[in-house]
Length: 165
Length: 192
Image (cartoon, rainbow over all chains, first blue to last red):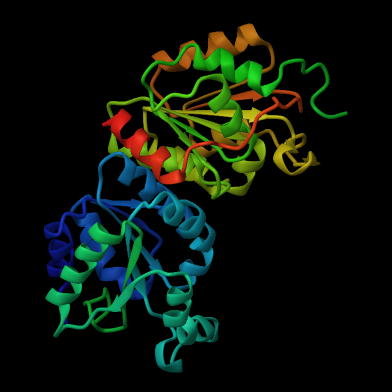
């Protein structure tokens, strides 16, 4: 399991310096670490977080938005009619609720279709694993720089240490 | 009666009065007619014209304001936009960025889609902002009050909301001419 502080440090090391989002239990450890480092600006909706990140990007920051995958649905229009058309990159750190069909009912549909959903939205994505973590983050940084659009790093349960191990 | 009885000023007139008072401040302008009118009145590289993502103007402005605390950030918003992203009033009110001036041109209609009514005739948005934690809020109708209050907000610490009642008149304007990536690049360079 990846420690939250190592994960946050790795994001800072690739240059991320603006963090916002809406919490999820899978992301609890990461958000606690970001708050301890006074790096986290909480948003009330994921589309708001995405728009705030776009503003921060235009003002010189490298932004990341944390959200549960349900938030992808909430952010859809902002990602398309703001980030995508203006070419504003953003790192989406998305918890993959409902993966493998084992979760509360409200997560099952998005959990099942999430990869196709991201592909339909033309958002490059990768799922973080402990073994490939260094490569995964390198890929995120490179895709962010090259494509200038949102890029998603999917986080499954138990890969980054949460608040309740 | 719509708009608020006695409202003589159009949004373009109000916007022109405010743009005269601005120099190099970043201005985020909401989608629809407001962006098109601002481009016609005074096209400046410090303007970020939204062409989509309705409801996001204040959130985009908040991101700029947090990243550039030394620059005063102005948002030109509409009642329909604020209603769509009303949660952002709470985020702004909680974070209290001092460098955040939120101007809302309130014509009580979705003007770009054919003047369908919004609900801002019965929901006073400046009161919502005040309750959410904005430090200064004012509601104005006349040009001289608009100019006076905006000048005052430029001097004060925010967040501030200036709600301007305007009528439904729209300028004869075309779509925003620049390509979105060009709008962004120009804006980024201008506010560096």
